[in-house]
Amino acid sequence: MSVFGFGKKKQAEETPVPCACGGMCKPSEIAAKQAAEAKAAENAGCCGAKPSADAEAVKAGGASVKVLGSGCAKCNALEAATVEALEALGMDTAIDHVTDFAQIAAYGVMTTPALVVDGKVVCYGKVLKKEQVITLLQKVRG
Image (cartoon, rainbow, N blue to C red; front, top):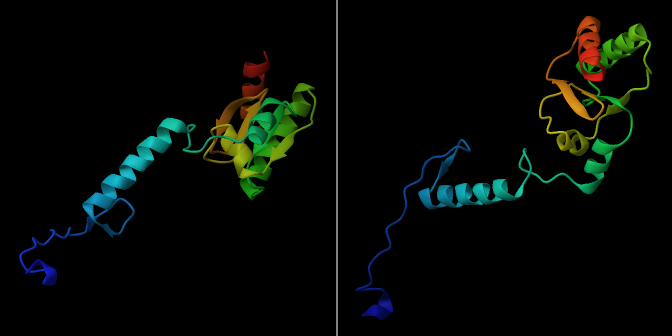
């Protein structure tokens, strides 16, 4: 009888339930995703991905004032305000504009534009005015 499948117990089929991905997933799939995400978080940096060696090198070296962002209008406005602030303070006006998202992620920044002074993220997610940049530069550099 077992040749034709008679007498075998049917495996209970899982009913899909709403998932965090926005779709309908089986509970076993959801548990597997959560376990994989937890393991990845244990082995990863703050954003879920280990920064590459190149990104770490960029973070460590280069210009002492950096604007992180894609090159959009907000990023360019922050860069312009930073240039004005540096000129007003009589500091070196060389600014590095980082547009590579892997390098930006190496700083732990997920919202741009961001301002980095001497390797330290001092502001992210908003466009600062010249006076605000001056205040931050004085605070960081003394």
